[in-house]
Length: 394
Ligand SMILES: NC(=O)c1ccc[n+]([C@@H]2O[C@H](COP(=O)([O-])OP(=O)(O)OC[C@H]3O[C@@H](n4cnc5c(N)ncnc54)[C@H](OP(=O)(O)O)[C@@H]3O)[C@@H](O)[C@H]2O)c1
View 1 (cartoon, helix red, strand yellow):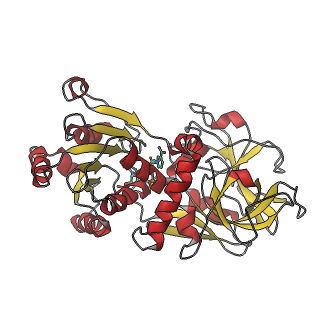
View 2 (spheres, helix red, strand yellow; view 1 turned 180 degrees about the horizontal axis):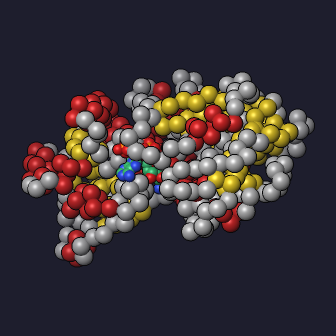
View 3 (cartoon, protein in one colour; view 1 turned 60 degrees about the horizontal axis):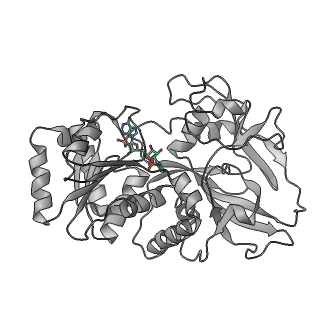
């Protein structure tokens, strides 16, 4: 998919009135672009115009280039925020994609197969699987011309699926680094608490927590019926959560003594909070943290600001940080490689399960309306699974 039109339309705070997002596919062509003539009416709806875009890629490669074919690309909340123009990074706009006005391709991660390599490229061969080294490449396209430096090779694709590889670099890496890099947690004793626990990041944190013997309290939103809430709780417990609670329970009077009982039972502390929601429920979550604890914010799904009593900073000595995997990946390329390999090894061993997904197959004949529909509504709550574009005969 490509975002085309005025590049400034992707700038944060830009008034939305003209996003084009295109999508393209063809043998050795890029069917690729959501043309940013989409306009926001509600902050979640995307109305994309000129969605589907075809153009040719020459089969003769520059010597330092690789031609890659896309196998799987998720539709993450940040991808949509980028199209909405409310995300701090934007993909590069180009007039090389054949659109009437400069365009950019949406999507920030995915799994790709190397189709051919230029004569001077070392360390890659036809058939290898690669992921993007950084976000911002524009992954919602059937084929792309890249350089070897743009990609990280998956050293051993044995036992892995394109879906697992295509969704490893954003959500699981975010959960991994937030659990490791902010405050030491003593295995078996200490606890972390997180909201949005059924999200991709939340499910990754639950599973990593289980691997590393960290106790977790996982906050979900109540579902429309009690049985649906119970079923989601059970799903997360089966994944490795220690406790699962609703945000209603978290905010109920006296619930803090329940949490104290839990932490006392392991002789540990509730040292780390992971927040992707914001607003009043996050304040309730923050108040459960132990003296000197750390809240790491990485998303704002409720679009509500986080307002905090100053006493939490002065007397309770809580620490507050943000985490952005794009910045971390750019600053720590080797660490990223190790983190990805570690998660993929857990995946091969069956210790790290796939997120629930809604697969959308993208073949040569896939209609524009189908792709547009796939992107619609991906920021809405209570979804059964993450939308993932799975590329077939392209
Ligand atoms: N900073 C970073 O580097 C980084 C990296 C990865 C992800 N993120 C952020 O992490 C968040 C989760 O991403 P994801 O891909 O893991 O999500 P996802 O799998 O698409 O799931 C979305 C999550 O958001 C929740 N949600 C949706 N609308 C909400 C609302 N109005 N109030 C409260 N919760 C709401 C959903 O809960 P329900 O099921 O109850 O609707 C679900 O838990 C996003 O904000 C994303 O941008 C940040």
